Image 1: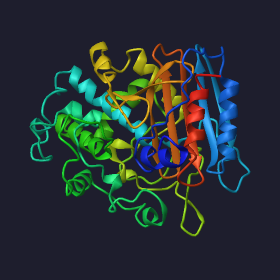
Image 2: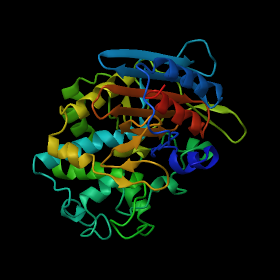
Image 3: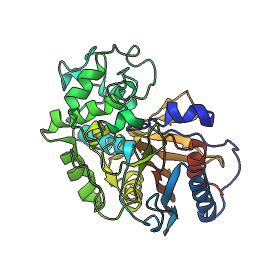
Image 4: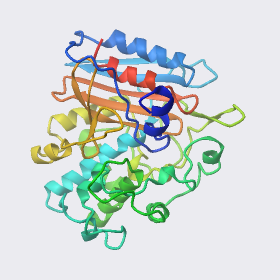
Length: 376
C-alpha cells in the first residue's frame, strides 16, 4: 500500500499514495459475456461482505451503454447508500494524470523523455545525469519510496497523528534521499511514490506553474471533468461523497475523509468521480489527451515481476482472466481504494471506488471486482 491475500496487500496496495496492483486469475482463452454488469455487482457485494469496506461505487461502460452500480453504505453508521457518482480520493490514479501532463509537454518539445532529470531539476537527485525523465515516470530510477519510511506512516495510529500536517514536495524528496538509491538507475522496476513527487516538481520547473494548475488546464478543463480537482492543502471532499475510515490499534474506526493531501502530491492527491474517470479513460484511448507518438510511449512497459502485469509511463497494463488486455491504474490513500481500467479499443471501461472500513482491505476481493468488470 502480496501474490497471496496476506502478503500481496502490504507489498502492493501501498496504503497511502501507493500503487494498488492486483493480479487476476489466469484462464486465458475464455471470452467475456456480452455484459458483465451482474458479475461486477456480485463482486462488489462480496467486497462489502469482507468487512473491510463500508461501500463500493462503480461505473461500467460497455459500448455506448453506461451503468452506475453501488453496494454498501456511505458511512459505518449505515443509513444512506453509497452515492452513485459521489466524489472520492483517487490515490495513485493521480499518476496517470501527471504522466499525461508530462507527455503533453514532451509532444510540445519542452521535455525529452530520455533527457537526464538534471537538465530540468539540477541538484535535486543523485546520479542526475544517469536518471532520465522516462525512468522517473516508469519507476526504474531507483529513487527510494518515502511511504516506506517511518517519517511518513500511511496507516494506523501513526498516520492519524499527522493526517492534517502540511508537507512540501521539496521536504518529501529531501527526506527520502537520506537513503541511497535503491539500485543502479534503469536496471530494475521498484514502485516509488517519491518519483512522482519529483514529476510534480518537473512540471513546475518546465512550465512555471504547479502540477495542480497544469493538470487542471491540460486535462480537467478540456475533458470537462467537473467532479475532478487537484487540491494542494484543502482537507475536504466537495459534493456528495462516501466516508473512508482507518482502524486504530484499539479497534476503533476513525473517519479519515478529511485529510491533508499534500503528503501525496502528484503521486496521489487528486479527487474525482467514477463518471470523470470514465471520461478520462475515453480521452486517453481516443487521442483527445495525447498525440499517437506520446500515447505509444506511455504504453511501452517493463515487467513488474512481483506479480502479473507491466508498467508503462504512469500506466498499468495487464490481462484479465478471460484474456482481455486492459490498461489503467489503481490507487490507495487512507480511507479509499480506486481502480480505473479500459480495454485498448475503449469499448469496455470500468471505474470504481471503495470507501474503506479498515486497512489493509481484502485485496483478493478487490482484484475480483476489477476482473469481473471485464469477464463474467
